[in-house]
Amino acid sequence: MKKLLLFNLVLLFSTAAFACTSMLISGKRTPDGRPLLLKNRDTENLRNYVLSMQGEKYRFMGMCADVDKKFGSVWSGHNEMGFAIINTAAYNLNGEGTDHSTNIPSSAHPGIRLYDEGYIMRQALAKCASLQEFEQFLDTVTHVDIDANFGVIDALGNGAYYEVGNTGDMERFTVRYLKFDVNDPAVAPEGYILRTNFGESGNRKEDKGVCRFMAISEYMKNESDFIARKFVTEIPRLLRHGLTHLDIRDFAPADRETPTYFPFRDFIPRYITSCVQLIQGVAPGQDPSLCVAWTIVGHPFTTVALPLVLHPEVTLPRMVTATDEGGSPLNHWGLQLKSQLFTLDRDNSSDYINVAHLWNQAGTGILQQILSLETKLLDKADPILKRMQKKGRVSPKSLQEYYDWVDEEITNAYKEF
Image 1 (cartoon, rainbow, N blue to C red):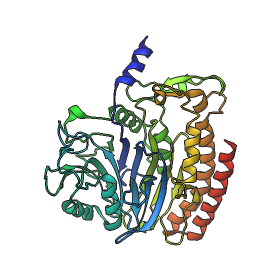
Image 2 (image 1 turned 90 degrees about the vertical axis):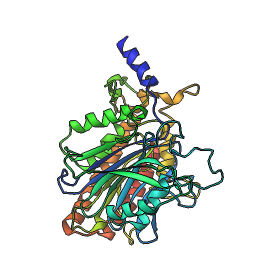
Image 3 (image 1 turned 90 degrees about the horizontal axis):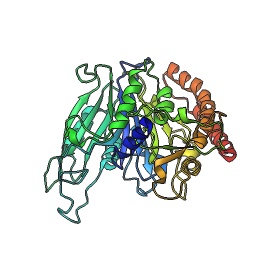
Image 4 (image 1 turned 30 degrees about the vertical axis):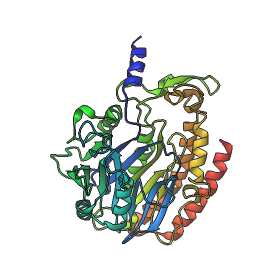
């Protein structure tokens, strides 16, 4: 009976449809002095690819959604100066009685084009090299419809979240922001800041993403090794619920043949989780090109993570870049596998996951196979990344050989899934 009550509570504890879970860790807490910036993106735009291009001032690499054909928005990324940015929707910074993402009435000024967080991040990556320049950019930006947390790091050792909302200016649509410095012990006593879908400075009665915030908070309290690979492979796949503390793996059946459905709501990974990036910055004085974007270009249950490096002489893996059909090959294959996890075809099918296909005692679940392939791919990358760190510069030849190998390995592996 207690478990049934908890299940019902999970389904009633509503969260925003467009949501994310994120984390910023100061380089003072990591073993190599490099800050970490994680975003687990939740959205209905599930088809993604990684874009690398020259911006107004700087070359950058970022996660793009298939619906954006003109590369006008980026949803996480970093540039050649070591500046990186992510976001989460906040939902509580602009007050009650307004559209969920702005304090500007949605009926006001019809026909005026207002830009969103993706536009902000696309512009920042093209123009900004530091947190100071990002703040100067926010001071000048207009015509944006926004209620968000932005996580930002730079190559100078700085890192902060910015809670950004609209000012109410009905003519220019300007923004206001409040900074939370991850290097300030009064703000981040443990050396990290977590954000889901509310701002600390907002109306706390309108908080969203509370269960996910509880889950990532619990996870971080039990961690001492702040390592990029560990976080990107574990956090987006946490199967323990933040509110109920139920772990999906405890309900794993004997094998894949025994259908076992579990209520799947408000976990860090969600049905609408579309992609993940953990950007590993550089310590002060390091070459900014050593930044690594640990990237899952699709759903974390069905798509492997890859370490991506921005360099003009290196072509990114074909698996994560755009195709003529939209999205990327790895993203497409991940979505196909995902359909095996959510097999109910009526009513609230996305709220129930078939645990037998995800994780079972025989070790044949989709996530178990994904983790096995991912371990092989990342074990191959580890010595390449370590050599680059030791030498203090990128090795284009080694990276390109690795990416070519990755394309072949992933293609062959997904044919077998």
